[in-house]
Length: 256
Image (cartoon, rainbow, N blue to C red; front, top):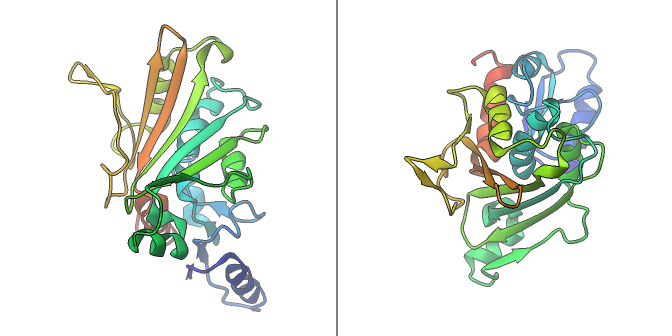
């Protein structure tokens, strides 16, 4: 059973399923209702070694949010590798196409009444923060401020770091290698070098992966200032939503 409902309706439906005496269906929930709930598996297959197998055998899987997918993909491997302390003061900035903002936002942009760009979630209570913290492994609540632009889909998630504040004073290459070791080659999540064909990437736009299920990770660095920027690029409707749901469904059905 795949649930594409508002949180309250998803909780009610799950409660009804749990009340069945037998033949309870397996559930993949696309809402935010169960992403940090006990007994539920978080549906980011690349979260940790063997996690895809956990999803495969689970009866209750919560599909991830689009913003957390990018942030967790960047941060979790570095926490696991000991390069980012669990109590590090993380800030996550992100921009998404308006299709990730719900019906009201979509209608406003398509009617031409919405601004070209805006920040939101300025009360520091965005609903994605609990899963972002839980599955990065951070003990300190991260600051997360999303934004939306006047384009339908596509997403950039970025995390700035002071390298001198990290254990062992790592370089950008150390962070990049930790990410590459975690994800390997040939999967949906790929680590991309910031120097391509001898040319350093200076700009990054959010729509390049639209209509795909791919997720690209990059590490930018200023050696002079010992600053780094982690960046994830994905389609918020692909790996950030329906693409992840299809991946999870295939795992649960034994098709992948």
